[in-house]
Length: 137
Image 1 (cartoon, rainbow, N blue to C red):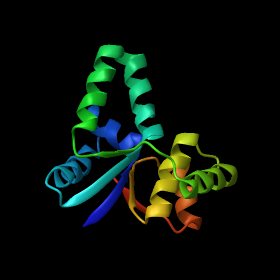
Image 2 (cartoon, rainbow, N blue to C red):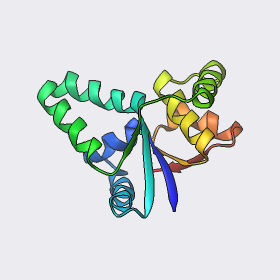
Image 3 (cartoon, rainbow, N blue to C red):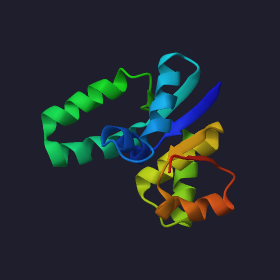
């Protein structure tokens, strides 16, 4: 079974019907049918939530949060010591956001594929780190 870590930009691609949404939808369908495992760190979900809240308001943000939590995506709400330390190392080493450091750390520690489109921050990481990426565009 394939295992994915969902970055905020991948989920936003689906919500905003952007390029790259189709492979994310396919993977989310696999999660619903239990043929893939999709996890998302709560920090990355926060990125989606506050962006939607800022743009569209609390009601829509809360609705999206509810839909995500009932979609087959497993939200990682507790940060393990390994993920904490790895996120700190990655944040200290690269010019990345704190949220990206958590998505990367989750993928690094679990061996999962990071589902993302965030080339501008993560291309440099991919060149050096042993983290698997699934680029949606």
